[in-house]
Image (cartoon, rainbow, N blue to C red):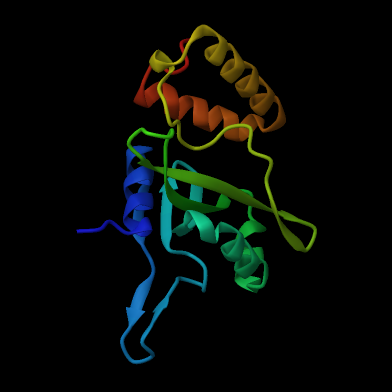
Length: 174
C-alpha cells in the first residue's frame, strides 16, 4: 500500500520527538479534503515550539507557498514567535543507477512585514545523515553552519541543541 506524504511527515516529526497529529479531514458532504485553518495538514509540538506542516509532493511546493500567501490565518499563525510553519515536499531522489529513496524538502516560512516569505535555512529540524556517516570536511562545514545559526537565532538554537543532546549525545558533543 502506498504511503501518503502526510503519513511520511507524521513519521518524520515523531522521529524528531514531536508530539503530533493529522489535522486534515475528508468532508464527505462537500467531497473535499479540509485542512485545519485552511493550511495545516499536521500539527506538532515539542517544548515551546508549535509546528504547523503543509505536506505535499515534491513538485507542488511552490503551489503550496502561493496558496499559503493568500490565507490570512497563515499570517496570524506566523505572528507568534513560538509558532512555525513549514512545507514538506516529498519526492523520491537518488543517484543515477541507484535505488531512489523518499526525501523531504523542508521549506520554513516566516512573516516579513505583511508578506509570507521563505526563511533562509541554515539548519533544518532533521538530519538526513548522522555525524558518524560524514567525513571530517562535512562535519566541519556543519559545525560552521551551526555556529552561524546559533548566533543568528540564539533561543531556537539553544532549544534545538538541548533536544539533540537529549536524544543523541553523539550529535553535538559538549
